[in-house]
Image 1 (cartoon, rainbow, N blue to C red):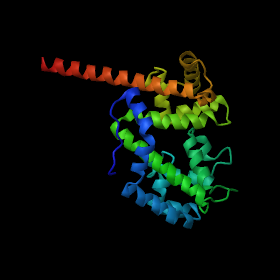
Image 2: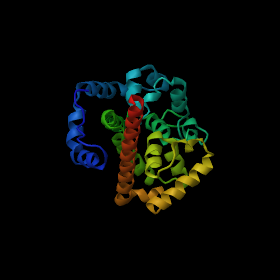
Image 3: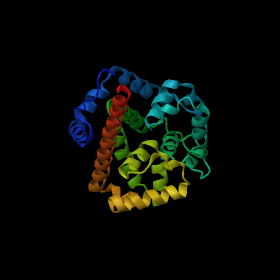
Image 4: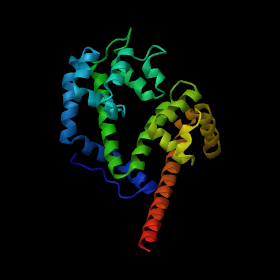
Length: 262
């Protein structure tokens, strides 16, 4: 990419700058020639796709399709991707519904190749939305190359808002938080929970997340994060704790280097 997002500082200060300049930076980024070629190709070719086989056969189309949902790192997991597409999302036992990650459900729904579903690749507006979301995800990835915590905050804020407005149960929303690596990282850091907690029983993890959220944010209801003040507190708490952790890690590294020199 020819344009790198500008982030003059880490933590909350850098976040506030990024938020205030987001529209301009994203507009410049989205004009990148490489990104333009990929999104133009998607717009030109996706309407010709009428089956799962068609989509799986075109890696460039699949890259955009998966990338729009933050799943681009799964592009070589062909059996998994194909099964998700073929089974769709309407049946309770469809693979997308079993993975504990709403991104797969959204991916399956976006193309509508499952049993009894209607393919959506001829819907130009729906496909344009996928292309735009791919640009958003690409911008966030570029931000992450400079500051990982900033990318997590951007992605987490967007996905948490979608979860907050979802009509599923609160427990189901929490399972999605636990199932999506970036949102989980944001929530674990904001709640000062150990990363190895993922080894515990899933029901125990749910209880710990909810109890800690009640203590830190005054609620364990994901829906409450639709409130801008609650969301801001979540993002700021994550960024502050992340910055502290980075500082402590740098101090620890410096101390180790000093000991070796001695």
